[in-house]
Length: 203
Ligand code: MG
Image 1 (cartoon, rainbow, N blue to C red):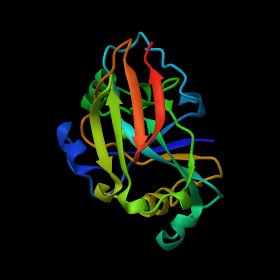
Image 2: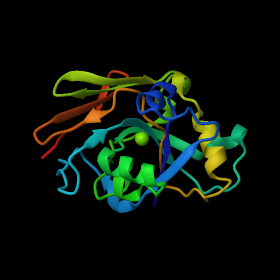
Image 3: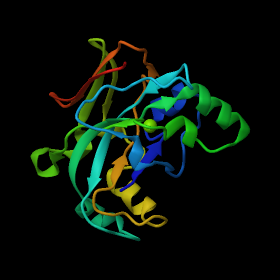
């Protein structure tokens, strides 16, 4: 499986990092070695001193598709969860300045903690899903999918023009504003609506 992620999909987050609001989805990937499951602790790597949390709604792809039409895109995912797109912001900044790819900043081991998944059918309105991240008991990021620049369906249609989606692939749909540094000893809790799905520590 693979993880496909969208950057800058909430306007206020693009602005907080002084990035332009994109006219097309900004896409990058993480390998399967990035996944961290079951609320296992995240061990802070030594190659960075500035890892940021980015809480994101994650879609689980349920069948293979290529060149998916936007109107059928909703049939290609059946479960929704939460993930953290951990980002070594110091490395990313250096690479952005040089126009280099982001993999070392975004795709390192365990850079993608992922929660359990909830059947899409259990959620009332996918275009009005609220979610938030608490850091040491303080809410630091809050978002709602109504503020997505590119909808779930649009992302799937766009990505599948280039990359075949397969059952089990995960799609990280972008983070709202409020990203910030995590430190050893921190406690992260992620909520989809009122339900806590992520609950783990930085070690
Ligand atoms: Mg992100």
